[in-house]
Length: 134
Image (cartoon, rainbow, N blue to C red; front, top):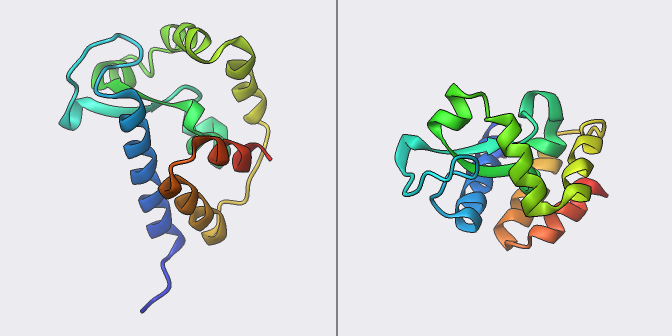
């Protein structure tokens, strides 16, 4: 059997991230509180956009929350409300820690993706956080 490519591992990891966020957060938008989200209206949004946070924040469970299409796409993440709710949810110290992690670079290769897949499958959020922040 062929070895999985980094691209395929990345896709698999993102699916696990979405499943984790949805299991943790349910079907309610984190930012506007709209409930019963499903299908194309249920997104997994990034508090700090994945384009600026690199692999560390792209897959960090504290950076991911369920959002509706409107908040995530039309409102660009609904940043001010996202920040307010993150502080209320995680606390100011943990929320600010995510901004510090923007500076951390991780080599996102097959080894990284495989380890992250293993951690997300195990379902231990703290182990995922420890790996990404370690």
